[in-house]
Picture 1 (cartoon, rainbow over the protein chains, first blue to last red):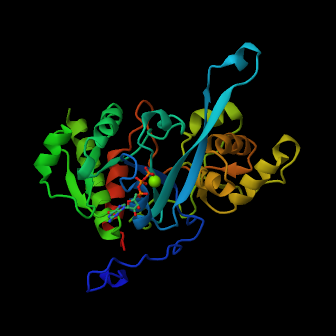
Picture 2 (cartoon, each protein chain N blue to C red; picture 1 turned 45 degrees about the vertical axis):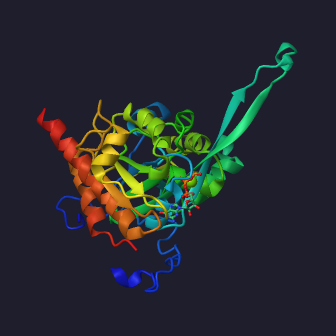
Length: 214
Length: 127
Ligand SMILES: Nc1nc2c(ncn2[C@@H]2O[C@H](COP(=O)(O)OP(=O)(O)OP(=O)(O)O)[C@@H](O)[C@H]2O)c(=O)[nH]1
Ligand SMILES: [Mg+2]
């Protein structure tokens, strides 16, 4: 497994690995698709994590957001609107001949989620990426997503210069249940990012089983 | 894995629909909804022969998803989804029948599906 990695012994950063090992189309045997949402504040590494585990070069989907602006033009019956384009990156992993997983790097701000109808519906769960140098940026993201009641885990993206915090310190700071898994993860590393996805899937399954007992 | 599972057809089935109304209730449309052309598809004509319809039709030559087709077409998912619904209703495109059907009143993935996701991730070689 490790034979594919390109990290060098002298501590230099790993070389990027060219994507495109998977074809554009899915195998004909695939009958089911599932999704995981990678969420977190601006610049926390959502696109980086998606790219490191995706079997295709990450793709980008854009929606247009039209916001009405109040102005004198309205009095004359003219349209006065501003158009913004909101982008979301995504990747995919074919998990077995019948099942494909999509990863969506969803924007942090709530007002953007509704642009993609059904983005949250049916998701396995959320991978909440946090940067300990600016943990407070995640509070809002957590507030918004917790309302959806999806299983989530926290992945601490380690940037150079970040201080070490243990998992309980992170849970306490974020005010999340002690049963919530917290993982340390370098988003640029496919192995660590893949491990974070496994942790989320195991947690989602555990939550589902717990629910069934109620 | 599932390949040797008894009772699973080797060639997947597709959600068959007769009309638009039925289509909308049967297919839980989402970004990741799978799509491909049907083997029996007739040429596109009439209102279904717009540039966008033709582009989506050709982008679905193999199995793909709404969001992937949208990304390649450089069109918003919301636009492509409407085109896809029309082409599914007309029988030009089809959506595979999921092997873990979603249940009414509960959009969350079933225990079995989550187990399959976990197994898939455990077996997947990252890096
Ligand atoms: N050293 C290091 N740099 C990282 C890591 N993850 C992300 N970066 C860098 O941080 C910057 C932002 O990463 P992105 O992946 O673009 O973040 P994002 O969450 O997608 O950002 P937005 O989509 O703009 O909100 C990029 O320059 C990345 O190269 C990491 O784990 N380690
Ligand atoms: Mg990004």
